[in-house]
Length: 109
Image 1 (cartoon, rainbow, N blue to C red):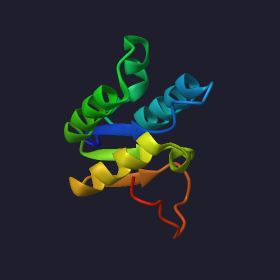
Image 2 (image 1 turned 45 degrees about the horizontal axis):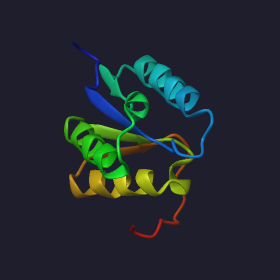
Image 3 (image 1 turned 180 degrees about the vertical axis):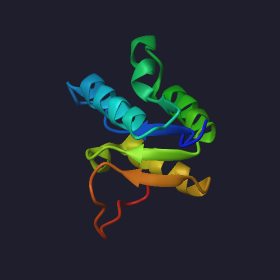
Image 4 (image 1 turned 30 degrees about the horizontal axis):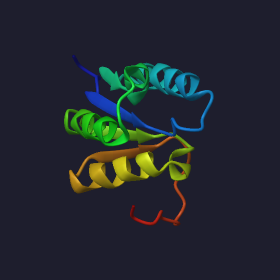
């Protein structure tokens, strides 16, 4: 499909974020408008009651299945999102930011 960009995974804060579903839905809508073919979001895992490490393992597999990751503005306040960013970097994924990225980098988990 000409003009389509492929698969992108959205990274953002879930724990302690009462509007995480809304955050991911807004990102999904935006990315589809930007012509991404598939947008994968981790909020679909929340109702499953997974342990933290199980959740991260599945999220890493979703990152592996994507060409790029999109970091929501709240990613720096989530230890899981920080881990996902570094995992994506280790896999040489394209990393896009909802907000302009500054020079400050988070500490590795």
